[in-house]
Length: 305
Image (cartoon, rainbow, N blue to C red; front, side, top):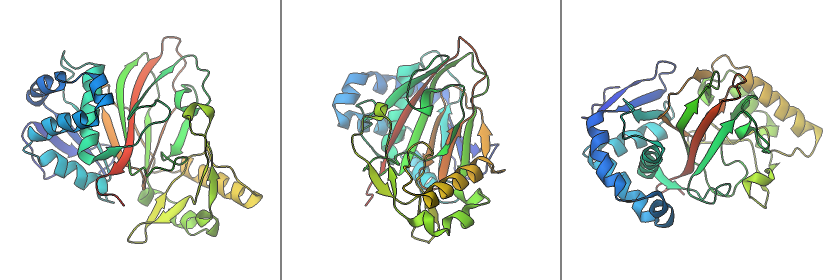
């Protein structure tokens, strides 16, 4: 990357030139501690304008160049994804700091949706050895197949942010990513007439959504390129044709040779455009002491219509 911002190291991800890495140096992190301490998490939850206040604190430390850079990356079809993280996990960086940093980054891109699962603008969830949930999200020993977010809600979901707050005794569990333009079967499935039919999308009880939505799997962007809204667990096919299409879609996504697998360190915040990047997670190796906590924020771009 040709961009240079004092206090930030910006470079291409080793697994994909489409993903931009942004490392935050200690000098910036230390300068964030005071403005971040001004608001506790309850204040951020109850007073939405405080989220923008800490976002401004972060952006001001870059002379307002960070917000320009990350908005350019996230909206550009050729990239659309970045990973921002502390270069070093200095002692003052804990889960609360990472939650605030994630909040700040999100509010430089857009406005988060209400997360019905958590009842807040964000959701925190654990992945452990034992699980009784009704979603792949928390099932450590199963693959979470490639998907996009927001398939079953009425709100627009332009982008997704995921932060790794904690991880212990974890082997496996790599993050999986696939850009639509790198997917070998995109044109074939995008041009299948079934892909433009309305599908019914529901959700399990834990999501706290009491309605269903209808939309196609594929749509087109302003340049006629494919956009996708899909997750394997939630479509409710109404006939054999729809079911066969979904099976073909699922198989060809999981079999793609261009899937990116990356192990993200604790403190990593990955943000992706939700229209042309799919994401998932490989299964973990069994371990009674496995412990992982993730943060999710998703929402719409500023001035999104």
